[in-house]
Image 1 (spheres, rainbow, N blue to C red):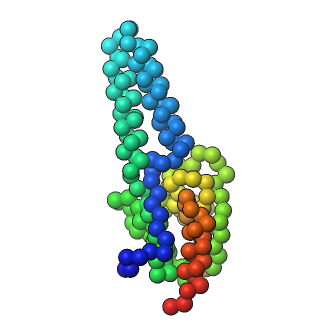
Image 2: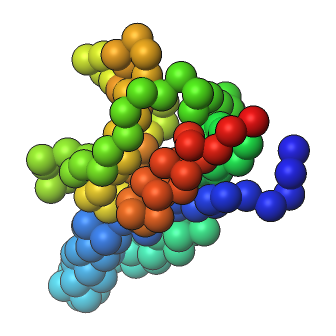
Image 3: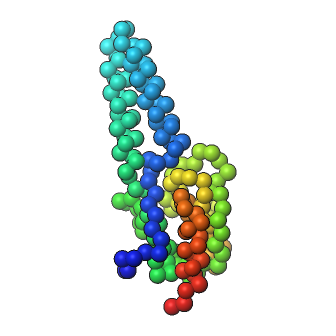
Length: 162
């Protein structure tokens, strides 16, 4: 495989702003409960440990890659975490490419290779996606932070001749 990619993007689990905010609110609650309970029981240490644990896990999740999106040699490759299988989509079988909003909901769970209602979804964070439709009518929703660039690179790769 060529070491030079037409497109490379890494999606991280812990970099979704809504999830970061939720984890920080939980840690703040633990620290506030620690201060409030400090003069009452012996349970205050538990709140302190849980609060620091939430902060520590949040810091680790910032560096944990959920999946990589690679466009190379007329293929779109999605490579996930340790136990996930590599997904390779041949761009020769794609008939339509468009940019779209990933979901109408504000909260979206990160997913990798989720088969749902005639579509396969890959999403980590953000609100934008590139939708690929193959010859069989199956849709691939590829969540991305750079939808314009991914869209243009896929269009360019599809027009290349072998």
